[in-house]
Amino acid sequence: TWATSSEDLAGTLRLTVFFKDKCQTHGFSFFGQGAEAECKKLLDAMYGSLTSFTVSLFPCHDITVWPLPGVESTSGRIMAGYLLMQARTAEGEGDGPCLVYCELGCFTAGAASFIIYTDNTCNHIVEELEIRESVVVRTYRSIYCNIFEVDACRFCARTRSEMQLWTRALINVKIKLRCDAPDPTIDELAVFRAAVLERVIELEDVPTARETLLPLKPRPALPAAVRGDCCSPGSMDDISFSLSVRSHDSSWQEPEAEETL
Image: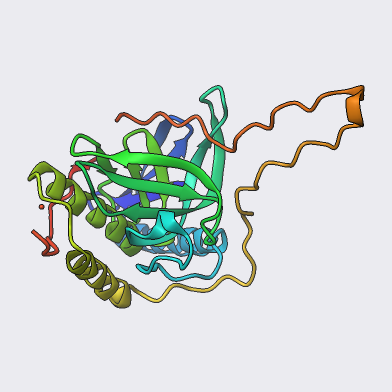
């Protein structure tokens, strides 16, 4: 995933490329007459191409606030939608991006949940992150970056405005936890959802890709059938990633960014 940003210095831009657990930054400077305009032209072209490519990795969908009937794990949902996640192998090494369906749940007993599913049916959980007041929510200081991090987990939204909505919701939950807010009532949860839904309606229109380029994170294959007593079946590994996770009043607040780079 790439991120681009313009510097205060006219005619200069910075390109940051994210790899596994590190990032690499390249600076470009333009000189001569019209340097600032040429820099802006290149930046706009790169941003347009990057936006089109990023959107092509997502299925057509809307961020939702409503729980799914019959799926108990979604009953406390505040918001949910597709994100790209930096996948990890069992050894903890970066394994490229994968498309997952994420859900931020309401806080209860001093913690909230950030559940990662394989898709929007929410039948198969990939990982569940515990959100406490100590969790670090990180964004990058760029008007062209859709990336955010929750502790050591890196995600990418379709657009910057969607990224801001995710991080805003996460930080609001953190504020509730930090203030030792009591568990919300059904009516208070409805207020949270209404506030998020209002922001979803205000989001910029997202260009629609004809076909998703990045497949959903697959479910694990079922074990092969065995022949009676000739052999015994091995245990099927649970679908999971080795993610490094360290682990209020009812009004919607406008917090400042918790940590930016």
